[in-house]
Length: 461
Ligand code: ADP
Ligand code: MG
Image 1 (cartoon, rainbow, N blue to C red):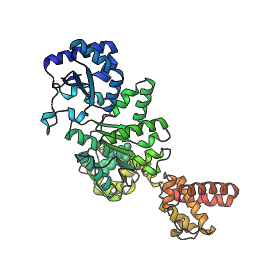
Image 2 (image 1 turned 120 degrees about the horizontal axis):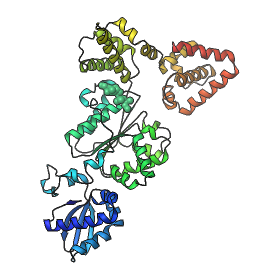
Image 3 (image 1 turned 90 degrees about the vertical axis):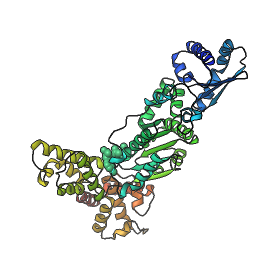
Image 4 (image 1 turned 180 degrees about the vertical axis):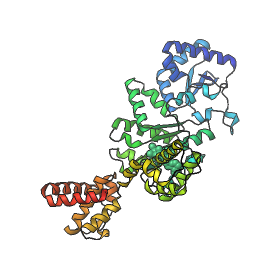
């Protein structure tokens, strides 16, 4: 409960009204519904109260307004009605550019809709995940630019920002960076970061504790909402439904949403179409697999952060060349190498790192790309690589193509639609069919099965 522009006599009445209602409805309901109210004005028989969200207003009108009015009449018999209206969080705070709006007498943090109310729904932010520590290169420059734009913009530039890319390529780093940046620049804005998984568990808990009003209200009065790894709620219908409504409510109020996933919105399987299309509405930015140059840049920057300046460039180059899967592994490799060198007190050289990292290096060696598979299979069956993506349907071409699709499914972590795209933009059902077909043929024809097995071993190295 806050006091607005009313004088101290009215404030005292307001406090008594709230006190009574509080004892009538209990502490929990008081915290949820009454604390966020701000008394604005008592004039002409009307009491005017503001709340931060529409949802809250509707709830108070439905449940408490009559009682509020009766209690007021006990204080002041001239009161005839109580009006509740929405005044969003942002304008309730003493904004620097609008001193006239700063009518409340308590600091904003004391308000029920303020920081404390939200703090517990945000996951902690990693202090290392800031823009300054994000190395920009070709594969991530677009995503980085989009993230910076969202962080710096005064008005929502696009909604949502959808970041996607493979594991360990910097999605979470960029999201935390946005959150840090906005929190620092504008501490009054409520910035909430959490994984889609956390979102789901909070929602389930609210359902179980019959607390969904609180849940909805908390989530619908946020300024910037960042949801990480949204693919997690694939196939989870009621969570998707709730997320969809939260999403719409925030977008309608002009709040910023940032979402990350491992795939583009259209490729998210098990996601409702209306949610996919909503996710597609803003700016979709993908982070591509790292290049050698980016990996080297990241290694140099990490070595600097670790305070080691004596890692020979040959060693960094070797790591950038060998550890290609993702940045997390690259970092891990560098950490291990540096820790090892410090432990044995010897300079880092190529021989020692091969020893220290032999497991990591082996794992990275085994990763094959779809391009390599296509090349290898094409040469094995004596067809042209271009026929892997051509429209030709002759058996002599179509069968090897199916073998390559099959191996791509087996040996890489690419999804069916991704594989389809690499084979001349074919549909994912074509890939599915190929996988089934080759499985059947392997069962029926042992020579064929051996052929495929041989190719697999060659590719795995
Ligand atoms: P994702 O969420 O995409 O799986 P993360 O954001 O968790 O990946 O990144 C994995 C690790 O790699 C983190 O420690 C992150 O700081 C680091 N990282 C990723 N990309 C970059 C980059 N461009 N510059 C610096 N560090 C990066
Ligand atoms: Mg992540």
